[in-house]
Structures are given as structure tokens and as C-alpha cells.
Image (cartoon, rainbow, N blue to C red; front, side):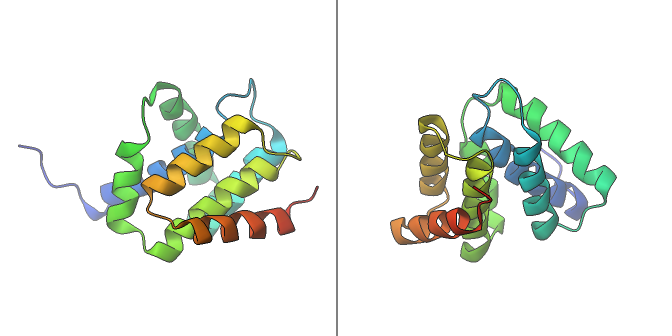
Length: 140
């Protein structure tokens, strides 16, 4: 039997789940660009109250975790349990912002976001709205 995680451990697990999904958007690329990392930092900072050090450690851990993740279900199930629908939509929007950070989203990025949105039970209309808002705020 597993011990019940503390509130801090639960919060950290949710932070990691959200961060891993943001990293997953660009995982197929050789390197994480500055623009993409900046968008991820901004999204995580808006969602969670983290210091700069905590944010850097979270993104480093998310990048490492992403390399060994074999599916999204582990991460999305935690978020489905603890995030509101609005928070899930904001995460999908942040994923789109990461995809648009370097101009045009590619097929892998679009597929990843679509799959995660489905697992988070984000409706098609919410998904399209998130995509359009991210595109409007894109620097490109």
C-alpha cells in the first residue's frame, strides 16, 4: 500500500504533469529554443506560484521525465483529477503558445496537443478557442 502523498507532494506532481505536457509539444525537436522555454516558463509561472529556481528545476525535471514518458495518461489523469476545466483549457492554450513560439506548429506538435486535449476532456470548441487565442498572441 502506498502512503498518501502530502499536499506539497501532490502539488509538485501536478506541476510536473503540466510541465511535462508543455515539454512534450517540442520533444521531437533536437533542442529546446529560447522562445519555447520562455513561453513554458510564463505559462507555469501563471499557473503555479514558483520562484525562478523552482521553475528552472521543474522544467529540467520535466525535460528529463519527458524523455522516458511512454504515454500521456499518467500526467493527464492527475490533471483531470485536480484541475478545473478552465485550468485544463489554459494548459492546452499554453501548449499552443509553445508550438507557435517558433513560428508555425509542425505536424508532431499539432498531434501532441490534439491528443493531450482529448485526454484532458477539452471539447473541440474549447480546443479551437485555445488555439486561436494562442495564435493571436503569437509574436509571429
